[in-house]
Image (cartoon, rainbow, N blue to C red):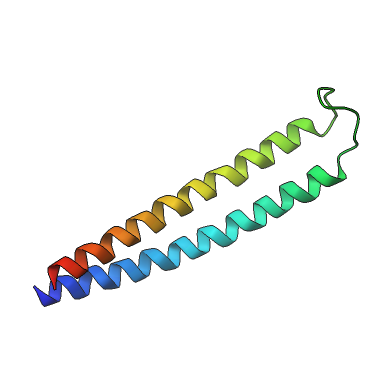
Length: 87
């Protein structure tokens, strides 16, 4: 049982490292979105600009790694709890 717990802890740490990588990627993409959003001309709330499609694309690219980050962090926490129960 101790070997199983150690393996679960090791896997949890590995998944946690992957989550940190995904988090850094999502922060970079959110920063890129914020930068492009702030550079966008203020023509009103509902008037489309030439850059609006690019902003929506960047927003979609920022949301996907954010969701993956949450999923991998949750999985790492589950592995840590399973390791605690197994020991």
